Length: 242
Image 1: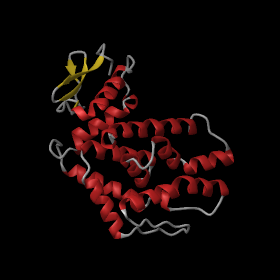
Image 2: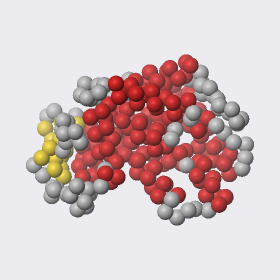
Image 3: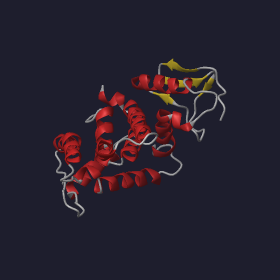
Image 4: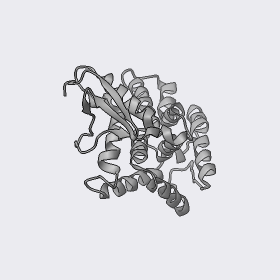
C-alpha cells in the first residue's frame, strides 16, 4: 500500500480520541472499527498516530507494531464485535500451552554463563509471579517435562480470561515474541520492564553469543525486534499502570 495521507493526527472530543489520517478516521483492517480510544488512553492514541505519521511512501506492516496489536484486539479478540467469538477462547487456550512448556522453568547446570543469565533473569521473574499472585511455579534442571500445579494454571488462566481485548492482544504478542508465557505475562502486568523482558527472552541467545560470538544480521536484528515488539506491548497497556 502506498501512503495516501499527508498527516496523521488525533481528534479529541468529550468521549475519546480518534486517530485521523487527514480527514479520514483510521480504521482496522476489516474496516468495521474506527481506531478510537477513551480519554484515559489519550497517550495511546497519540502514539498510534505517530506510528502512522512516521510511515514512508510505501506502507510496511512490520513498521506498525502498535497498530497491529490494536487491530488484533478490536477485530478479533473483542467478544462484542469479533466475527468469530470462539477465536478469543482459542487464543487463551494456546497461550496457556506456552505456560505448560515455559522455557523459563527449565534451568541448566552448565555452562556457567548460561546458569548466570538464568539466575539473573529467570529466577526473579518466577519469584515475582509466584509472590504477586500467590501461586507455585515448578522448575527443573532435569531432562523430563515439569508439570505445573493445576491451581496455578487455573488461577493464571482466570486472570487472562478477565483481560479486555487490547490487553489480551498485547499478551498474545508478548508471549509469541518472547516464546514464554511468564515473560509476556510479566511485561503486560508490570512485573518486567521492556528491557528486562527482552533480556529474559534472550537468555539462551546471549549465552550463545558469549561463547561463539554474534552473527551479524541475525542476533542484532532479533535484539531490536524483541525490544520494538515488547515496547509496543507496554504502550498498549500503560493506562492500566497509572
